[in-house]
Figure 1: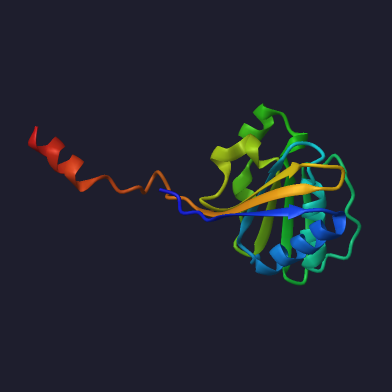
Figure 2: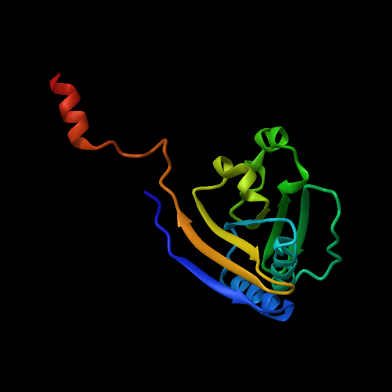
Length: 163
């Protein structure tokens, strides 16, 4: 059973969004993954850029058509995976495990396209545009139980051995 605590914030300007992103970035550590989800124009790219800047990335961040971007920062490497640039088939074949590194932060934009490939422990962020410069953001730190190591109910094992 996943453990989660969902929080909600209303962001009323780009300044609010950048401030919120900085606060979030300060809580993130190398080895974590962040699933950025929302419709086009909801602000997931702005959020990814703001997190990289908050970690000290000083290079140019452009909206290139590369699905994988790397940002070296003083806190560690950031891998920015933009799955919105991939087809569903490409998402299924993508080698995610190459970017879930204990020494790097992994930002996964368009993560709703590859839910089954996300790591067990992930920060999920849903952005929704609610006005010209207004966003609603919901975020959750999720810790999922790995289905391969899920413990079976001891009573079901006992019952099946009695049959």
